[in-house]
Amino acid sequence: IEKFKRLKNEGNDFVKAGEYEEAANKYSECMKLNPEECTVYTNRALCYLKLYKYEEAKQDCDHVLQIEDSNVKAFYRRALAYKGLQVRKKNMAGI
Image: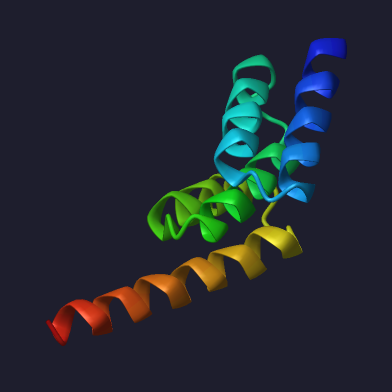
């Protein structure tokens, strides 16, 4: 439990510093220790959104919503992921 908290806090610190790749890695390590903890998935989804990894962000949010079907952060971030995916499709269509 202590290692989980430490990793999560390190991830949060990376997010505050704008180091989203490093933060996502910390949250991924947290998931290995406790795959049922929804906050690390929504936090990693935020990192993926910042990194323009919309499909990965959507998958993390989908996972959370299977566990907590009323998780507002997961709904919101999944909507942002869908929006990012739509923009990407429109840009690809224009190429």
